[in-house]
Amino acid sequence: MHLIFMKLMLHNLWIAKDTGECLFHRKYGSIEHDENLITSFLSAIEIFAQNIDEGCDFLQTSSYKFVYTTGKNTVTVACIDNCDDESLVRQEISSIQDEFISRYSKDLEEWNGRVERFGAMKGFVDDHLHKYGKPIKNMLTSRLELDPSMGKRDMNLKFSLQQDKVISLLKYKGAATIGEIAKLMKLTEPDTEKAAKALLYNNIIREVANS
Image 1: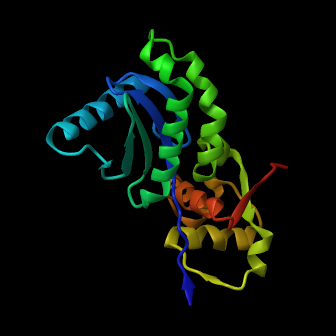
Image 2 (image 1 turned 60 degrees about the vertical axis):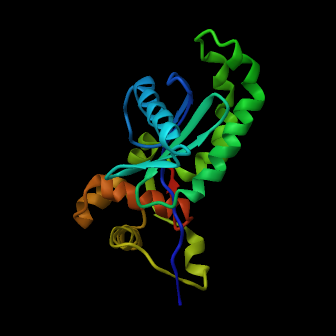
């Protein structure tokens, strides 16, 4: 019997005013864009969707899903891989949205355009979301190895082709970087990184200190 494990790869989280201004942003993955440009675009889509329907649950592109939850005057959006199940992150961002409103509802009513105080949400957000993403810079420089507990698990896990190649290389070499795995297994670095993140999240592999 095969166990198909769930994974979710989080890239970014934004909390924005319903008028589009970015109030809070955390980057966990690879998307690099102007925060206010993104939140203005995402908020505009939400306002449009509310005018013709009941709002926007998520927006999907060829590579990503943007998962929405809305409050009285804010929009919270998480960006995940387009093959991921958005229900895994929706509950998390709803909790984050509720906490943000609980802390800052008065500030939002009297908002003067400054966002510094909202940075205090970082710890709460990371506690909820850090398990779904690995910072890119750490991933690309860390050495990876199989988690020792893997050999003791009485289960057969089903992996993607890329994940199988990462596991095979680490079984052979013991530890390697993303770049080494990509080169030796003839994968692209983005595909190798994506596979490694899913394996890290599910505790199949782990990061080790560089020697």
